[in-house]
Image (cartoon, rainbow, N blue to C red; front, side, top):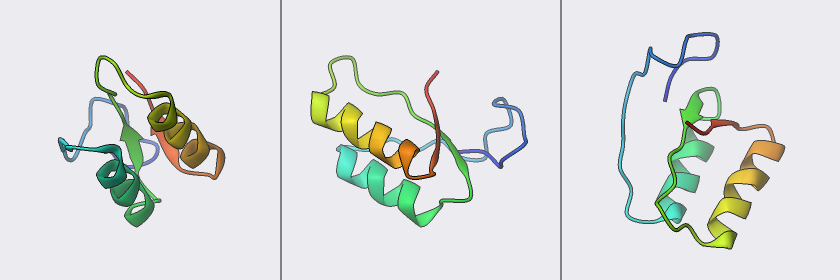
Length: 64
């Protein structure tokens, strides 16, 4: 997670999650921040769709 306008290398926190519902909750609680999300090696289609839905609803999500 980093502040909007800051470069990607200015991360302020790195969190690991056991499932995507935790990721979704963290993003919704911190909408003003930019999230760099690295999905697992074999994510489920629904998990990727959830990230796309959050991004389309205004959340700031980047993938490395």
